[in-house]
Image (cartoon, rainbow, N blue to C red; front, side, top):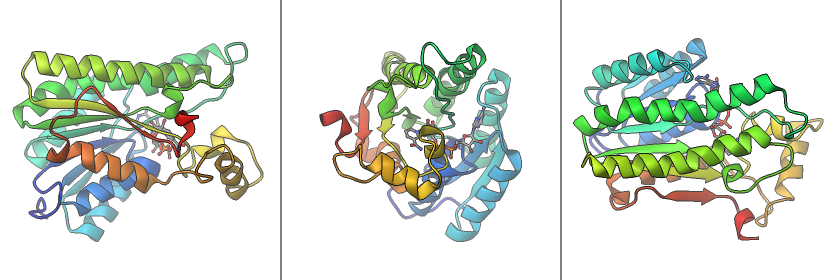
Length: 261
Ligand SMILES: NC(=O)c1ccc[n+]([C@@H]2O[C@H](COP(=O)([O-])OP(=O)(O)OC[C@H]3O[C@@H](n4cnc5c(N)ncnc54)[C@H](O)[C@@H]3O)[C@@H](O)[C@H]2O)c1
């Protein structure tokens, strides 16, 4: 299997964290269909290997799965090194792994605050730090940080998630400026989805079924629907490709109009 020679990401090599399921797996698959070689990483080692094998079989592109805890700096060094070596260079990092634990400033467990900061924010710091020089070596490069509309708009019951995702938004800008200062030719941007139909929506609302949860969330969106992992995939393809060559330190909102209200 080789990197694709056709498509908007022909010849690109991408590492996507949180790739065992949900948004990360779909982003990796869509990037592979656009000609990228992909490394998927996840704390769920078996799950991510299975996801990579399926993508390789379906797209004919190079796809590998790597067990990786994004809260661990040493694991980041190993994973970025392994992806760089296996794919013959690295052009794109998608910092996608994340968790969402509800709780207000008064009710949230301290341990859940710490865990959210580690998985949702510190991980992105580690990812940017470790990958920047590696991406620079194979420039042009692109780091795509999956924040959330919750990083721009707060709700009473997501104190830690709001805070971590807002941190990702600003860290993105700081990392983007650092890359320009170093003349790395690596761009850094964030994506801010509202509700996307993955298992994560079950943490956001507690309904009897996924369908009920989705319907409840859709009523809060001006477009009266929630998003799909494909919606995030298309934004990632744009930011990963050279089409977005003048875009850095910026953000894309995928929210069906929520933030326009
Ligand atoms: N689904 C939504 O409504 C939504 C909306 C906005 C933003 N997001 C963001 O999109 C990203 C992906 O979310 P999703 O909906 O696909 O969720 P998901 O729960 O389906 O997938 C998250 C993945 O991250 C992995 N993961 C968790 N902790 C990890 C760790 N310590 N190290 C490595 N991997 C770890 C999980 O194993 C899982 O495969 C997250 O950052 C999330 O905050 C999701």
